Image (cartoon, rainbow, N blue to C red):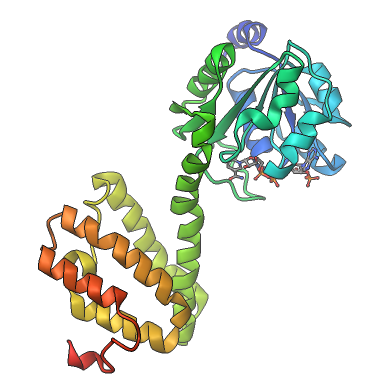
Length: 312
Ligand SMILES: NC(=O)c1ccc[n+]([C@@H]2O[C@H](COP(=O)([O-])OP(=O)(O)OC[C@H]3O[C@@H](n4cnc5c(N)ncnc54)[C@H](OP(=O)(O)O)[C@@H]3O)[C@@H](O)[C@H]2O)c1
């Protein structure tokens, strides 16, 4: 950005501060600076992480020894500590009416920042619907295109919407009572996909193959699935035995799980039962085949045929 435009923007934009110099704090610091926001201050728990964040952006923000010092130097404060620390960090600072304070938790509502509101300041939430693994901050435009969940009212909502727009991010307005539901959608599509990938990988070990081989085989499949969802959405992206009505294959899966990985039976059954309506919606399965598959998925071990060949 040309220097003159940068300076004009910096005059108009609030001085930002970050409390919590971890993974998201570092990403946010980088994006704020890239968007022309003056990043005045950063405060963390350990000196090492606070200095690491300050060094990662240009111009370097002031390294503060306490959250209070960061609050004294900035008017728009992002609290990027772990969720459980947000309320106590907010309660430890003397705020005033010039402060707008935002946390980045998807699950918590802004009431954890009531200390700010009691002092006359504004409080809100600014949650990027993206996963950032520790140690891989990915500072190169890591937020562009990521939807931001904003919980805020009035002037703060305008400020945060303007920031989202500057970051190249669509945003949605969230009500406090909807935060948990909103956040668990992220857990389903991100965290639990990791859990499923781990479960799938563990089956390869039972075949005598390595986790590296499993990853090499399963990753292109996972990527193809994501591409299918991106191209066609759900339920259209659904393929596999339930979509095709292959009851015999499902029976084979259940028998293999009973024998080799019984701990995965509940999750296989639950996901299968949730998949049948998708195949019905795609019209790739008729109602008789759907009912037969549901019966298979719900059968207890005592109901199940002892030999796969019996139903294949
Ligand atoms: N990572 C993600 O994918 C992601 C995505 C969306 C939203 N979020 C949200 O972003 C927030 C931060 O998550 P994160 O993944 O960035 O966590 P993180 O990597 O663990 O970083 C948290 C940072 O907060 C610091 N901290 C802990 N207690 C503190 C305190 N009392 N005062 C000041 N600093 C303190 C830690 O200091 P030390 O360095 O000394 O340990 C650490 O640097 C959470 O609310 C989370 O829900 C995260």
